[in-house]
Length: 174
Length: 94
Ligand SMILES: [Cu+2]
Image (tube, rainbow over the protein chains, first blue to last red):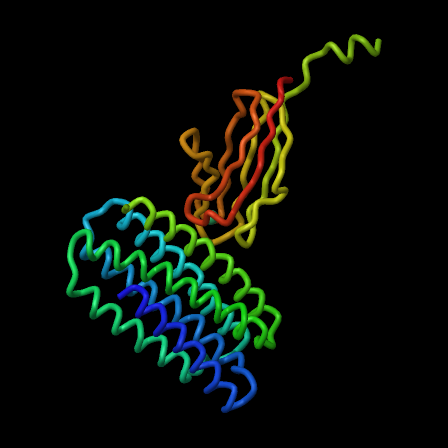
């Protein structure tokens, strides 16, 4: 299941990159802001589910860290778009990200105990990896505004940190 | 005269490490036993300075936290929340 969902996510990013490439050569700043914000919101939603379902201290601590960090960075993002007078614009990549995350949450809802914990943290590793890929190859190179680019670069370091943290938690569950 | 100065015990110093955009800077610090390390967190994220199985300093968002160095030792430390954040501390006898 882990491999399948990772592949689906990888396919999704290839697909969205291709879709966006057709629409225009690269996503616009309002679209990039929307994608980055959505990626954070979805990870908070996954964490909220884990906080309700898990009884494992490592998982609960990790989920709390995700809520705290992603809310903090998204608040910075909101402050920045307000300052730049940019309205985040919904787009195919944001929609596809949301669809995959909704499906993953529905799958996780059916699991309990150790099976839930493992599936949640494995998906966190895969999710952060995929978002990092999108940030590195598509969003950061496409961003026009220097402040937006800088915030995305901080976001990349944050997501890379979370990916390593999730890998560490996954290792402790074994 | 030179001898007297050399023999006088070195004053304990406070060494500042800034954390900004998930980076410790300077990444590598040399200090003496009795010195204080102060981590100044400019991020909106909480970070830690952690040495596995030894010690941990919590550094909440937009605040600073400090630690007095007790023993002469070299440490590689990292942030437990963001393990890609790494620093090094080399502590020598005064
Ligand atoms: Cu950190």
